[in-house]
Length: 162
Picture 1 (cartoon, rainbow, N blue to C red):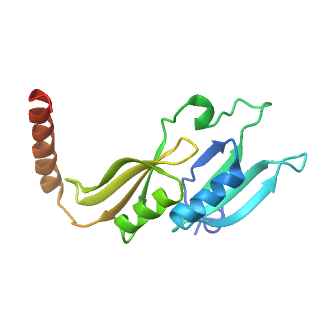
Picture 2: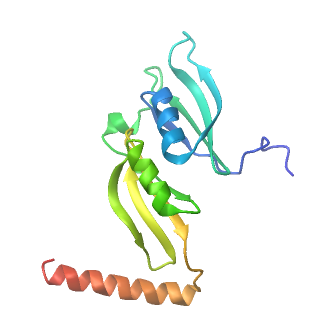
């Protein structure tokens, strides 16, 4: 084990900027079963300068917008180019839980050609989350064939005006 990576972390750890980290912690706990690991208040004792949560076996870091730095939240930008893909044992239950916690459905839970059953939602802070369960383990060839069939069906629907 490398001593250059702190215990519990992996090589890549996402870090988000939020307007209200406390609200985000509450949402992620209710939506995804997140565990609060650490919260450091801002220098003035208000807000959150740095926080860490664990979702499953992954750590997510975040802090709040800071006018002294060029860090803006997805809310301030009106969306985010970043999205997250989370695996759960029961995607249907995970999706329902996230919606009940305040997430907005973007795509209902459905089976996809690569062998995952997925649903996509947006959290109240402007980030997109796809929750998934692997339902079939497919070969690369099976995924390619499934993709061809999927995109052919999409093109046909588009051509018919549906």
